[in-house]
Length: 247
Image (cartoon, rainbow, N blue to C red; front, top):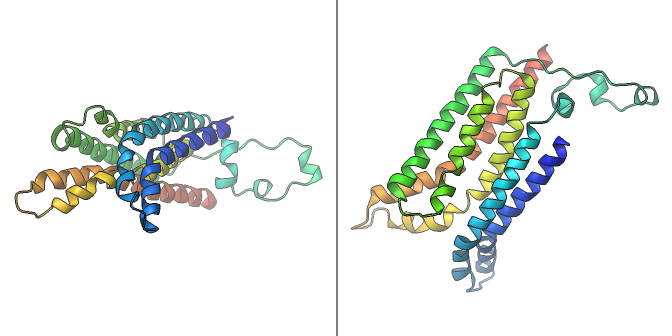
């Protein structure tokens, strides 16, 4: 049931990303083939992106809720080093009930690192979002709500990370984080549409480099944070697997 919810939410999130970024993607393809439609079509992203963002959020919530219901058996193949989990099943083992899977707790140092990393990440994303809506894009209107979405998910992961010392809760956290981070990497391409004008204005006479620079940095932080969280989650999970292998 958990895996089904994760797949359903993931499909919705991917569909939302593709729909929201469709004009941008088609524009790049058209420009590559020399079509002038690419010079105009990408601006329609401002209309499709909000709709796509709503679909992405719904999909991510469904996937995260599904991940929160994952059982130790769902993670057995990725963390267990027992032969009955990795080897082929025989006729003798197929008819017998399998032993329950137990996930050991995280090493204390790894658990502290995970909790600290998510707390620091939340602080960086929250400050970035607040500065963006308060200083650099104060007149964004309804888009202000979308600018605050990264802070919502970062705060959610801090809440989940409070129990990261438990093996099952840690793997649920990592699974949820990877779902959101992959979507964040895809959705993070959207700011590149409107940041090009700010980048081109840097250093020009009469331009406000503080405003342009702040807009660029705060616009890219969600993408950078998604990439960083993917790397960290992968390293943390690998460290946990090594601790299990050492016994």
